[in-house]
Length: 273
Image 1: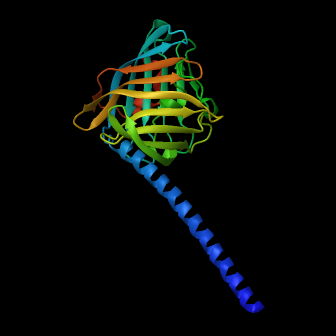
Image 2 (image 1 turned 180 degrees about the vertical axis):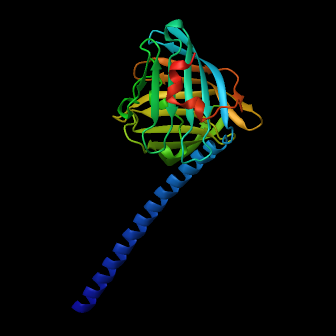
Image 3 (image 1 turned 90 degrees about the vertical axis):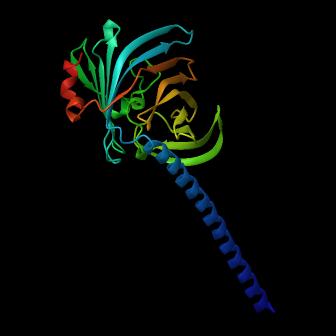
């Protein structure tokens, strides 16, 4: 009888352990599915606009302080797309107005897991300053955009987790949490809303290093070029901790303007006007 009781207890213990493994496997499977779906949503959005080659656009930066007072700057923004997803795109921002910052330029070579290469040209000092990886969370020319916000948001720079689907204005959106895989990001995580119709990002929330909600970026006035390339013509970034904000208002995009790698080298920055 004691032997039977012992065998029965052993059997129940084994069943319990196996049950625990089943629960663990199910939990891990669910987590893996959320990660996989999150990546799929992000990949679909990223790849929906690939193949444009290069682009150029004129834009206005509107800065507002907490009291609502405004100042504005004019600049151009050019991008060179890298056809390989394992290599980041290159971009150049060049300011033209007001006069005291005319010629100021930011050159960015986006990477995947390595630190992005960024150089800032300051005409008043007549020198090119390399932005270190530890300083990329700092504000770009006094705006609510950080230096790291001005590099291409490459697909493989993040890991992903699918959260839910919900309405976003007149559309439905997939809500995806993404975590920077690169070092020295100013954000612990970001939550993005991607519409299920055109697969474009409609909003991103940024959480600081203390995991507190820091900023909110809204993408507005989307327009479609050449029947396939979507571009937001207004990006509104609001700092929810300071109540300051910065809007980027874009003109008409031009694609296939003939840009090459030579247009995105550090040596050209001091000669741009």
